[in-house]
Image 1 (cartoon, rainbow, N blue to C red):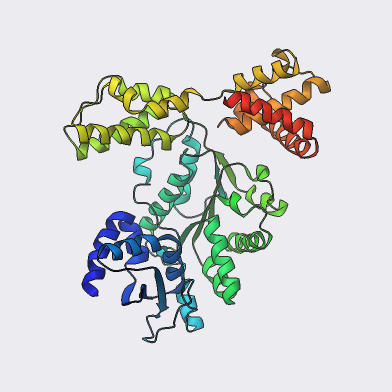
Image 2 (image 1 turned 90 degrees about the vertical axis):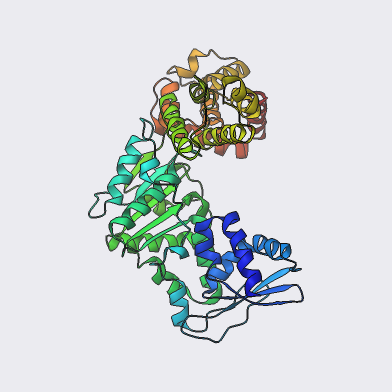
Length: 457
């Protein structure tokens, strides 16, 4: 049995990655294989639950490949100070045997109990440009420790602009400077999951102790807790307790606190008390810098890689959605060149990335939205940028603002500039107004749906 698990672990480390393997699967010990059930000993319930939710299929698949017909995993929690297992339920692991074991399971000083940090996301490989230079500078300052002058640091922006990269980089740098520091990084979804688990198991005081005894708390995608009243209540108290202790908080979201619908006003107010930094959409220069940086890394691994003139410039010009799509396209080209042993020429790039390039060619611009809305409501395009406040002009203008926010990755300040230099708060007001009216006026909702279909066609 030990031999079977050992062989499975070799494959699991390759499939889930060394970081995930070391944090979640390595602490497990296979204890029995019987009647389609693989039974494991686990040091904490949290590890058991996390494995059940995220890696159960991987484990069952590997065991099956080694001749074991496995339909279900079960876990026994065996705290380190005790050799007696506690049997698990069908759905997951059992409750720790003692309050002390529960506290051990929620020790915030152990990074594996937060979300694992990605070793690739460091300041060293974060490409800085005008769209992200302020966010990068603020992240660097926080990672140095000591009095910062702003708390929390709130990073917001669209998908693939570098929020998560900066958060991981902060955690890496902070812990390198002070290895004894307690840094807890996790998503808002994980925060809610742990909170619900603590309520179910009557271990809420252990939960509070875990989150309020850290040097730095980092919560990604905080918009996830919007509308979840009990989770927001606990998050608010946790936030206050840490700030009162002078502990640093770093938050990320896809929009500003004021724009997150369903988020309590007191939380919006608290989040707005620190430094709010927008990661703007990438520029051509920044995209080209990222491509050059990634190419150099790949060349170190494959020195014979050949990329023709103009390929990186072509990609930086054509793929403008976000950095993840850009990096994915480059990775695909690398794989193509490596497997077929071909030079990456402009023609090869166009052939290999047809689907990605076609998707980006359909990108919607603010100009497109303004023209389509003006045409639909029979007003002059100039009125979109002008000062007129008459209802027959102001309402279409607000609809165009709303669609610009929904269909582009432009920031509020940038949208404001495209609407005659209006302040971002004006754009925010227009977006909210249309959201409210669309819920009450079916005719307006149909107009918006029609405009959206026409723009996305």
